[in-house]
Length: 611
Image 1 (cartoon, rainbow, N blue to C red):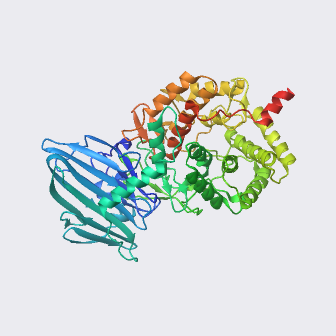
Image 2 (cartoon, rainbow, N blue to C red):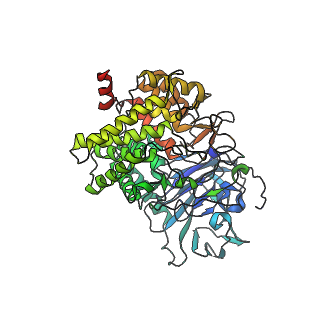
Image 3 (tube, rainbow, N blue to C red):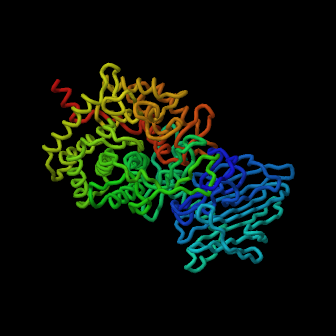
């Protein structure tokens, strides 16, 4: 593997997202687009400076004096980013956007003079396939074209552009009221060049589109700005052609800086389905929820025994993992990975997650086809015969398989939702048999997954370790929020997994570990789960304190990554992370009283009545 220098990478929280519902870009505070994959989220990056340095591809527009911006924010409830610099000679604003719904992908950048006169510079270096492929570039006046194998891109500018050694640059001055425009367009090289895009019209149309979209929002709770911003970012992670939602826009941003815990999250995880549906349906976005549900049904159709934990944006199964060894990694964190080998893991909870998500869609009034119920029955048939098998667990442990408690609880949830579907919706199915298996799972988990000496459920049967996913036991209705076993588990998680007020998903040093060296930060989604659990237990003040700590971790434009380093006080992992954003939305709904607590199921009520 060739040696690369360790780069002084920009902090993860320095980045803002712009997206057009097919792909997304990350823009740094210095005006540089350091990450962009074309034409899809999971395509090769043409700007990969995020994971190496400027030589891996970037596009910077900023004052000639350099430095980071004075301030930035999104225009209204949109992903139109406005970055402002105030210099000694004047002030300038750069507006960045990816217009949605286009046949080709366009990146629009508009420079607006606010006051005085500012010397500006632009530097664009295209490097396809994660910085490895240098295109052939030709430049004429204010236009340029770049071609490399299957890739083609065109730059159209309102100021002259110069070409030198594969890089495109420009220098000009902006006075108050001036507007300079740039449009970078991408198309497969065998197709005709896209029609020129009017950047000003694209800006107006994009803002109108976002206004219309946000007009659906029904959230009226106590945190409107935080919730609306998280929903906008979540929409920015949506691949509109199929309705799939990627877990994050990036690959290989480290969970352990300098270590090997670097994964590709540009795929759709089934584990996110129920949480995402709850967030979308609970805030009025029924069309998005329906599209996500339909993506889910298409993706999992087929052999129920070959259900995967994740799929590509179009629902395809194969996401082979490889290492991109020519990139130095963010802050020297290697390897940089493309694809994700965890797709081949056996994670029992996924069957329950899918069944729970489809049940939620049915309960919420989304039309369910006969085919969808046939699919669920095939999943249930498989689950009945395999729920006792050990698995790799929710957190994709790359070590020996175990009997993870969360996995068994979700198997219970899958059977429980089937029983309720028959009882409440008159659907056809062997409800007595399903009820019996459900009760069997419940009894086993309470016997083998609960440590009565410590008063807590454990990560797996007989283990000493804990798992933040245990906080979901009352949320799925396995036990009520105020059950003594749940309350004991909440306290145990707080004592053993709390790190300066935030929650680890598990302790990698406990029991058999997770098969990887190093450690990781506090997991933000799990911290939101703790806030939910505290609220469910009636400890509202503590829940709100937890929620306030979490929302304070967002960067200046509201983005959250996967994890947080409590010592270095910085975000870790891929960004923006859908799981974290959904956690914020759902916890805000719970604390605002815009959703009801999940009570014990009829099953659990019956058990208590029997006692």
